[in-house]
Amino acid sequence: MAKAETSLESGNGYTLDSVREALVRQEDTIVFCLIERAKFPINSHTYDESYSKIPDFCGSLVDFVVKDTEAVQAKAGRYENPEENPFFPENLPPSIVPAYPFTQILHPGASSININKSIWKMYFHELLPLFVTSGDDGNYAQTAASDLSLLQAISRRIHYGKFVAEVKFRESPQDYEPLIRAKDREALMKLLTFESVEEMVIKRVEKKAMMFGRQISLNSVDDNNGNHKFDPSVASRLYQKWVIPLTKEVQVEYLLRRLD
Image (cartoon, rainbow, N blue to C red; front, top):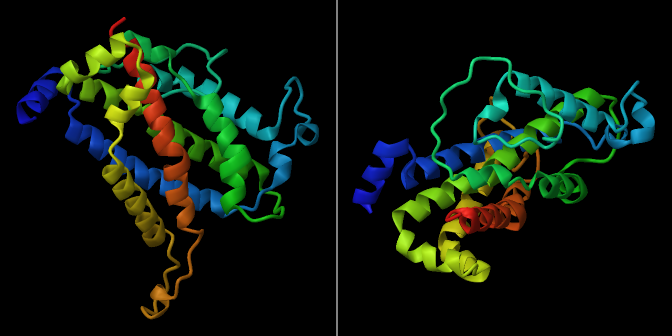
């Protein structure tokens, strides 16, 4: 394994260790974004198309914030980075800043893999009701902005499966190539699944949520009173039910294109 990782490192800067480190850092971002969104109640007007009535725009306030923010970020070059995947790629303007020479580790077929529509649906219909309170505090723009930050963090983590798959493929092509040629999705999924690792990730994310979301006071006794900014089990459920399965779905889709 060490020999394979050295080869990968010299060729493109990605190794299994560096990819794992990136995934661990992304856990932190997702947990902090969950805490930020939990500051606001559901604020349902943020998602009501009939409420926003934005001139020359059809959609809710969150649609408007996400689409316009992505357009600005596209002009600034965000989506030139292969680690980034927009939610509304159809009408993004081109970048207007000098291009950065990002390492091209991925197979060209990676650009066709974008499951953000599924992530969007999951987020608003299943995840959000799990951890935000009912009510309305009028902070609709802030709510939409925190939704976008969390959506982008979740999307980045899930689509990072492309890099995970590429590194695993380069490390053991003899294991993957026959399954790819046979288009055997089930066998690829089995090969990619390590239940003990997944369980460790789920537990680590919940522990981070407990630590990062703890209400801190100057009285050390109060720090252990169990008060949290949101339910830490939401973070582990997010990973168990959606992040890990969708990441493996991205990995399989990438591998099926790897030999094209």
